Length: 180
Image 1 (tube, helix red, strand yellow):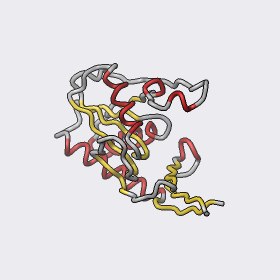
Image 2 (tube, rainbow, N blue to C red):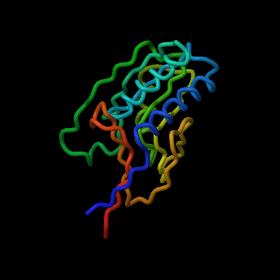
Image 3 (cartoon, rainbow, N blue to C red):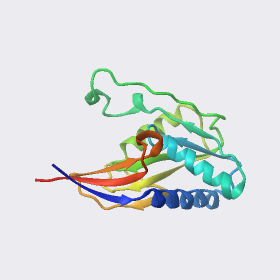
């Protein structure tokens, strides 16, 4: 049996992403050399939503790409015999650009480490920044987000579940706790 608590509604997610979009613009002094790169699955629609928010308030179309990190994961051996390799699609070239890596939840930092390795194989950005909808703590690596929708203190026994309409047909963030 699981205990489930909603911590963000659809409107909360929208507001957090609009705020992150403004912070990205401010931090980078404009958007002409910014590329948003989403980590599948939910980082890609989040990056697309941030880009749409930027287009709404700045009238600028920021490129959005997706980055498959499967082969860069340090838990590949434990994920089963047939890890599915996804698609990387990033245009234009990352070299000299401000890359904003976008993901749904920052937890141990291992996904971000894998993404940094994958980006390094694609070019040499001027900088890499990290935007996450949820930062739940419990880092195992010295990684922190530059842009955070919401900090959510959690225990390791809890799961933070981000549901997005593009993937799950609903927008919400919930915490699930196993009842003991």
